[in-house]
Image (cartoon, rainbow, N blue to C red; front, side, top):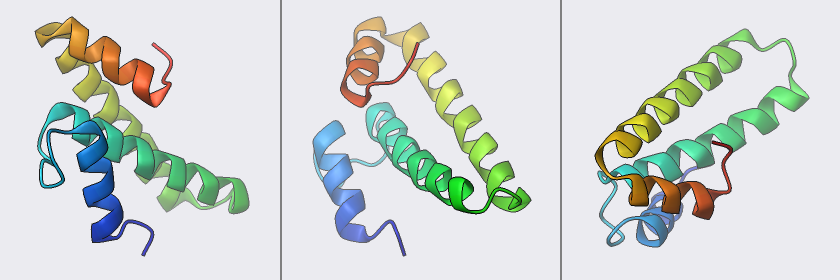
Length: 89
């Protein structure tokens, strides 16, 4: 499995408040980004995998909605997470 408990806790600790904080918007966006990067690598190897492509598109949409929420509620948190994860605006 690509996302172990340890990796999830590491991402949550780095972007959230602590290692168990997987519910904050920053931690969720970071986890979505990690999963998107993993699925992108799979898609490069298996170009005809339609199930993975659909999951990837869904995750990108989820991340976009979460970032839009952050932009509407607290623009500074939004700018910080965009900069940390090196995402396009």
